Image (tube, rainbow, N blue to C red; front, top):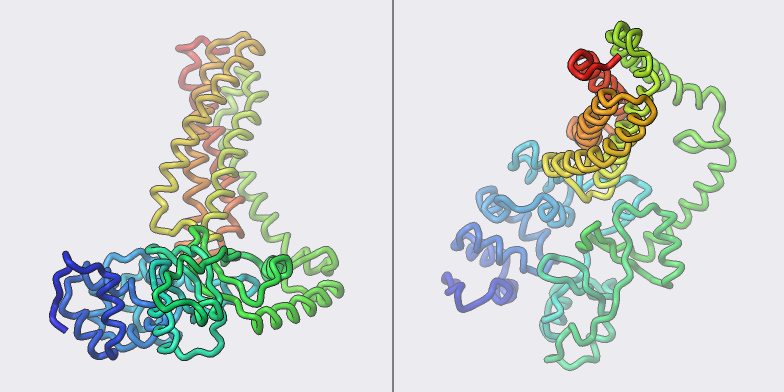
Length: 427
């Protein structure tokens, strides 16, 4: 096939035309296009051809097609391939990109993402019944019960049962047959999936990410297996045989789980106390500062915890990636500053009427802004950094955060009070 005039034909039209060729012809045609053109055509192909096509691609063509492609999009394609092929293809990317793609490809054993399979039939709402039937015959999978309709960004729009397509007119547009498609998020637990399909009376359910991109489907056989595992899991819980601690776990098991973190937390508490000890003379001279120390530490801690919770949730739902840490950090810096100014004004007024000291009110106001800005930044960065090093962000983020926010709060408040005591007439 000679290189066509892209100004006259859309990528979708070219993709539909190429799909009728064999794999060697498709690969030969993609080699003739530029990287941008090859990408545009490749991502318009029906997903069912991805496994054979990507496996047959040589490394140079693969990188040509996937050059500067969003890691989530790469993962959605590679999720259809066997593990060995995925491993070989990921070696072609920089380690940072490979890590992010693998992060999207792996889900916990209790999640919808783990239960789903990615071999599904999808199409555009502009496709005709005839073209969908052609693709369906080429796929040759008798288990396909539903065709899922997606937009240009692979976002789920709706569904069409195969029997609707079988009796429709060949020229009819799929969008005319489409109905709403109830879906579950990939992070849903097995229990949530089972409850969802019971409420909606489904034989299979599509799985999407936080941006509504279609990732796969959970079929009835997987649902039956999940239901059986859920029943056995409930039985195990009754006898305290779960993998993690719960209400009926042995005391020795609970101690093993909790004590190490309590010891670490104790060490970090002493570290924060050492910082306070550095300003012992200042506190002895201006005793009222001791009253307001918990206020500064508490507000910075709450600010950091809010940023931490939002970031961990974003990582868990795969809403954000490691590579977006700067964007997340900037947002939390801005939120911390705005909230810090608002809280500082309120705090400053209260402290002024309490202590009758403009100097102390000014110091606590400034320190509140500084500590809340730092806390927001640290709350966002800590879980992402732990994730980048292959650690569970939920395991130790809060302890690290508490240490940093306490130290920053004490340093900013007591340090400013010490530095400005003579200028502002404090004490």
